[in-house]
Amino acid sequence: MGKEKTAGVDLLHGRIFPSLTGLALPIMATSLVQTAYNLTDMAWIGRVGSSAVAAVGAAGMYTWFSSGIVLTARMGGQVKVAHSLGQGNREEARAFGRGALQLTILLALSFALIANLFASQLIGFFGLENGATIISARNYLRITCGLILFSFLNQTMTGLFTAIGDSKTPFVANCMGLVTNMILDPVLIFGIGPFPRMEAVGAAIATVTAQMIVTLVMVSRARKEPVLFSHIRLWQKTSGDHIRAMVKLGLPSALQSMLYSAISMVLTRMVAGWGDGAVAAQRVGGQVECISWMTAEGFGSAMNAFTGQNFGARQYSRVKKSYGVAALVIGLWGIMTSCILIFGAAPIFQIFIKEAEVLPVGISYLVVLGIGQMPMCLELMTGGALQGLGKTMSCSVITVVLTAARIPLAMFLSGTALELNGIWWALTLTSITKGIVFVGYYLWTLKLLPAEGAPA
Image 1 (cartoon, one colour):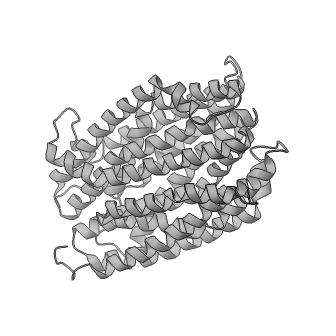
Image 2: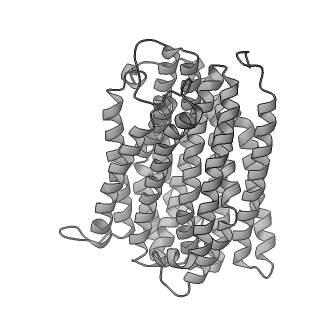
Image 3: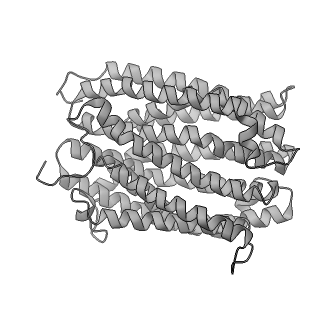
């Protein structure tokens, strides 16, 4: 594969447990740092009041939705770069890396334009009650989505760094962004020193500034990375074949994520029927739950790269053995987070919102969702492994069908004596089902892999 060496983990030849965990732990730590971003915002904005939390929560649904859009470039680029490196073809890997970054920039600029032009209509979808909340949500949306380029670049570059076995650079970059966010949040939200009190707008500015810092750190590191990034010239044309190959792999995951967030938006609108306080409780509860699902998703990203490289190299025994290791690690993580959410619901939620009428709603959310954490973690990890095999369409179909089932299930259960809790139970029951289906499907897929070294 040439003389150049990356600072990343050797995914093709190293022992499976050290190689996989060596790649996964920084990714999981990065996910925790990204969760800390959101929790920091929520902890400070929660001191303004539940209406401000509702504003950030409603607008934040569209930044979540945008993460699905960039998956076309991130997932397609990450998988194709990993496959190319596994096959020993660095020129192909560089072409896919360049195309992924070019596609990322195009998608970011397009989404930013749409978000600003239709900000009023997008926020109006949720049916918020308070006029000041609506204005705050609209302003938060225009800032965070208008400057979404930095977030998009961070996500795609994280995927490309992961594909070459370097998960430490995104971790360091995100840590620096977190420090920036932690400093700026109280200053801009409450107006410390020469800065005016900006509340939700201040949280948006702090978040975007932190994302800029992350981008600068990763670009600085990328300029010195010898295998992939230092050979990429963004102004060079990428062939249509490379773009189509990435879109073919990445689009199913992108559609899955966008539909997932769109379904969540519909559920949020249903939650809004119980008032802005219920929306605030859902937002805080969702951010706390991120500790579990973002970490599992991070491990899934590691499985994507590990599986992708070894699949490309036709080392199917390593593909099979890695899943057992991953399932054990992420299963234990899921059990631990379940215990934290179930038994620590009250003290955790009170960190963010102390309003008496909102507190019981938030506690119920955490307890009910805590029950389904382990299967949800297994689902996300297994999804990453399947994507590494190129099975992005299968993942998307399973996820979309079972996630869409949340809407009729929530409508039914919320019409019973469970009321609002019925919506929370719809989330948990479908998470358990997805975990079972994903694990079963992946184990079946492993049985179909050919003999070691044979073409798939």
